[in-house]
Length: 217
Ligand SMILES: [Zn+2]
Ligand SMILES: [Zn+2]
Image (cartoon, rainbow, N blue to C red; front, top):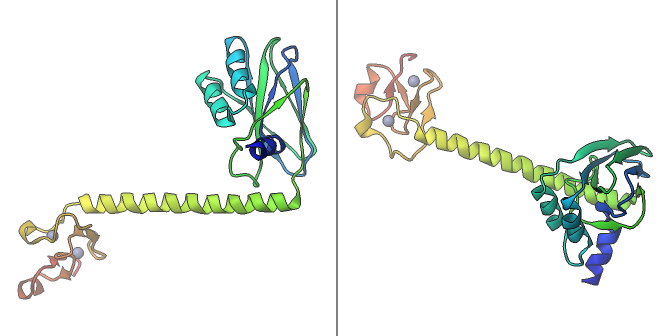
């Protein structure tokens, strides 16, 4: 448990500026990688709710993000070049929660959380070479998994569509089982079941079983 809390501090991806009098934060990217960030600016009744999430021990960043989303807050987003700075402001009494990721290094914003004290400057520390490699490997794996998921979904949708197609044959009573995907005839472009997919001439269709009279034969 202690280890997790310590790593939360060092990972530092969702931070909260807790001092109420501040109305401006400077986000400084000390790394050599472009940083993308989301700043959630909130005030009024949202402050105590979100502070409760950010501040309480054992309340994780995912829960804090849920509170932030439940409050209907739209993030102010931005990109900070290497060694660059960004400024976010909020009205008096407001707060700013910030989360960020390294472009082309992190797959997503980390669910880690950190509370800032009275800082008005957030410094995003550079990652070690090993850490960048570790995260980029994870990024590659996530991208590959995502591509596979998209392809699988597309294939499944295609299979469903082709199964639902009607066989173009006029002899539906001799069709193969309805739940088999239909196949497109390369010659005429019509769709047929397994029994009727074979392209035949008007003459040859009489001699054998199945197939379709293909106008292109
Ligand atoms: Zn058929
Ligand atoms: Zn055909």
